[in-house]
Image 1: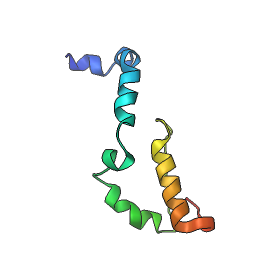
Image 2: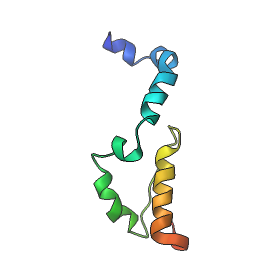
Image 3: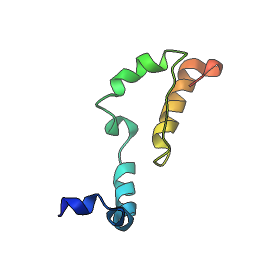
Image 4: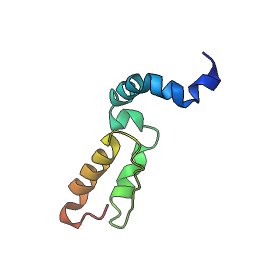
Length: 78
């Protein structure tokens, strides 16, 4: 496959459903295993801030929000 094609909006438009299905078939832990071990120290910090760019399905921000609620309960600022 031509690598230039992979960088075009047309490639994404033609393959969006397949790409989304592939991405959503993995859990948060599977997708982010290279850095997720850093999350406990971040989440345990009550002043931590996490920015989600909103470029996906919401799976990741949902996971992070649930983790924050479970850690901080009503004192959640994340």
